[in-house]
Image 1 (tube, one colour):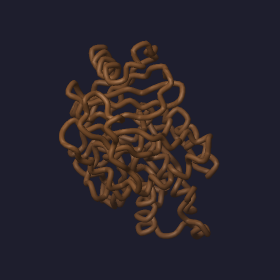
Image 2 (spheres, rainbow, N blue to C red):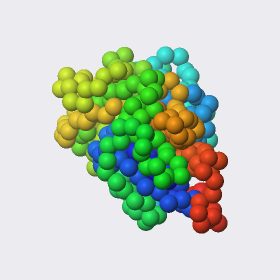
Image 3 (cartoon, rainbow, N blue to C red):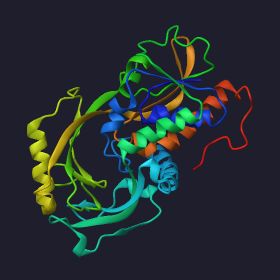
Image 4 (cartoon, one colour):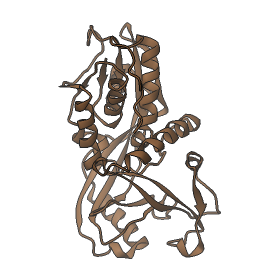
Length: 327
């Protein structure tokens, strides 16, 4: 098996395939720490992804994996309580359908003039720890890594039983997919003055805001600029994010600004996890996750395993006793 893509989606697909008995090679143009995945604030949150029914299913499946991984301190996954604020009439976001436990916020929990809110506990994935952990899991499973930029599937990996295209925005070129578009996201990282609970304020009148504490630092965002390929920090955007965050949470007023980062989310009108024909061969696709790549990663990877089994048949040594890894 050959997986194209070294971000969180590619690595998780590769890991689940390897743990299902397949010999796997990951081919990626850049190191995992240089992908969009590394910029992700990575609260489990179905965000900028469709269709809703499939997204909820993949996200719910991934929730179980992350909840189990939170018991492993090396993984960088924790379960954190927080609040999603609503500025208009009380309602619940569609993604709460993937949660087993949530409640309406009490009036004393509302911030910044919010009209209502939902309080829930969700997985938080600290990417500086999680990506190295995931890479190590892949190596332990015998996965081979190759650094190469794949520009066409014509003649690529001719001896591979199956190719999985999980290259984020790079999948657009490989699959000639005109539905793919970048959504630019910028975040600011601050020192943590002692915050523990995450805050999501999508309806903030001054622009979308999220505040995600992750131990020694806090990630504040963000932006959703569709069609922008600019990966450079915009100082004006950084200042706007800081103003919104500090107005909502005054404790951040004196927090040191550590850096700002930009990532390009790979958006598609419908996340593509399916078998497809390209360059005269059958491939399995797994891309177009928008802002929910981490959130859907395990569920989508398990779907990829099912598709590969149907296309390529069982691995040479047969299926292991426990074909799909469960933490």
